[in-house]
Length: 588
Image 1 (cartoon, rainbow, N blue to C red):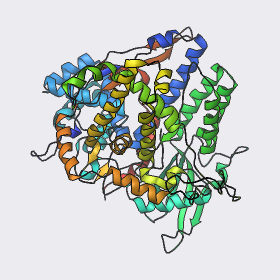
Image 2: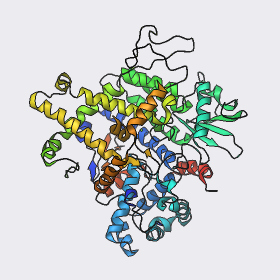
Image 3: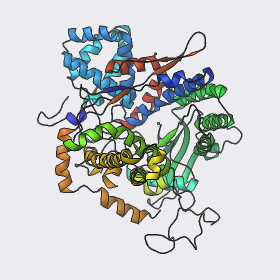
Image 4: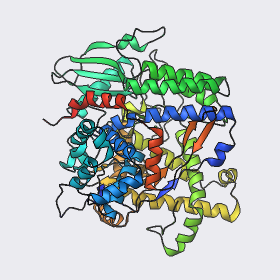
């Protein structure tokens, strides 16, 4: 693995004892009508087709690793592959470690942890994995393809050097595929100003910088630049070259807006959404899907916002879904959206707290999540002024409770929470939601709504706060001392618990890790437990047109088998998208 023998690389390995839990929805699925099952199936397929986009958003090598693993596991049964591995000199532990790596790769849709953004590598010698691959059935069947895939991804798959490859971030602190390899924070700032000027949302975009210094701002859509615009296609008027007089540069910046990023995958996703539209329960669902299709076809974020409005209006649906470029946790600039057990002794708790925590952690978590999502993320108001100078609040009457004075700052046209708070926007919002949840969990009327009263309510309240305290301590695992950066928004929020300047000062003050807490981090790292993986069922349509729920074992093999069921064939379209952009991250 080409690492310093004195270096502890356990942070970058998937432990072979990582627990795998089954995401069990059997009873819920049985309760659906045939029409609801078809709606859920096609929406699910849309999610999995779009999920492949995450590979392209994670690292330069992730799509290639996905293609390689798929060919390897499709070539022969897992039982036959295990026998082959034994013949190639892999020990039983090494083979299990490879399965652990593969299951984690599938579960994270890439070779960086979706919770923490650190890279993970196979825990076996590179030459042994190479021998297994070149001895496999897929290599015999298509030597040219497998040789190309292995040579393209082997370095990225195993390397932890230079240290910049160990986490997702802007260079020189990390790596990102939301931006070409030569883009930095300064480039992102320039394009942010340009997008504000054009009233263009960054959520479904990626940024590429050409060798001549010009930029390409690429929108995710099934339509490409060559597609003639359709009626009401407002995005088409923005396509093409632009000159932007940025205050950060001495001359105008050349920026080309294009669309068609991930276009083949976006088309597969919209096809499934259109199929789901034939099985909707009501008009709101039909209108929601229509706006989704329009958004994903044209690259229009406003259309997705309209879809969200219909989603909110769809009260109490039997099958509820949400899809698109939503959370911006993985973008190092905080703007661009990513496409969305086993009982052991709990660490860092006294013996007295172990029992009540183990018994009630699930119930307390449900209370926290309910309050976090519904009243945390689901409440609040952004004070803003529109292009006509009209405020959405009574400027002369509303008082800032922190200063006792009138509101002195607000969002101007085109500005959003994400564009203003940028790199800390996601974690700040998570902190707000966590604080709402933990505060309201002490309200007995709230607890009564969740069905808890008396002594049980007191215990739920206690365990909720105990859980948050423990989570704040464990959060130190997701802090990188070398770069002084947090790698996970929820964890930074739990450690902390649009006046941008004051807001940033406040948040940065409470999320700074002191030397004393760095000492605690050493203890946390020494006692950290593997994060569990989940094996999800797969739906398919039988010969009679009915939807079948296929389930898999709670094991690494079960996760691998579930992905082979979802993606039974080699994906030439994914390969093409991957190969077309590889030059943007080539080492000079």
